[in-house]
Length: 356
Picture 1: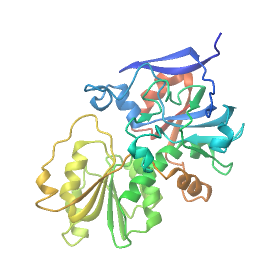
Picture 2: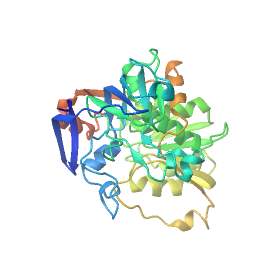
Picture 3: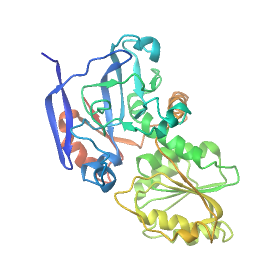
Picture 4: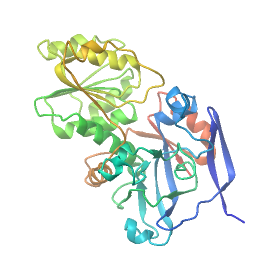
């Protein structure tokens, strides 16, 4: 007779159910089982919930059902498989987080250290069996998982956003921000507000945040933005050009998840500028690609996951350089998933947590 636990289970778009008899994972060789302390709801989770094409469309859907969703989590080690303690350098009781990807360890990307682009690409919360997610009482980390210990100096709320903060750090690193740069960040959602804390640590000449919500802009100013603008009432392209002698910003980071954020950025950025695309979109975005080549010769860079950034996030939290205040706004019990998901879709929330 197998042991059971309570978990949220995704069966399809808008078909998520609380299952009180979901099989509790057991640790095999090299594997780690953790008691989940919390799991955040990501914008990607919301888009998957509503059946966005990126997750469900095409010949090879991203979400493999049935699956326990959730990739923003941390927990305490409760079971170690044979050799797991030595392999992962963890002990029973340790607070830990695993990176959101479960790399295969065999493809050419994994073998060359670019594990976050693993060809197999199992991501917690989207692919079943090997990568059941954190919206459950317990979860299992596979032998190839990359696990990081969390010191006591990192609070519950901070530990809950290590994953998005690592993604934010990777995105900002992709921008290669220089001391003289004028940096524009479009989008002050959970990830944008994480980036809004990281960017000032690099001390660019000007740091401008764009968003449609004034409360989120106020939080961005608290984190160090030198100027915040609301595209609903501000002519953001003119303002940025006027601030830069008509040239445009040096760096534009797109974190809105809306096609207008891309079009706006291509117009706002200067020639030879660096455009970093972070967002997950619900559908295709159409732009005039001649702007990228013939008119501006832009450097277009993507940003995916948080490689080599988890330990940096944990260290910066430990040293008081980053905070969860203003980002973690709501917390719910696991059984209240429906209410939590509804809140995650409202502007009054930033980051919603589920606590098993």
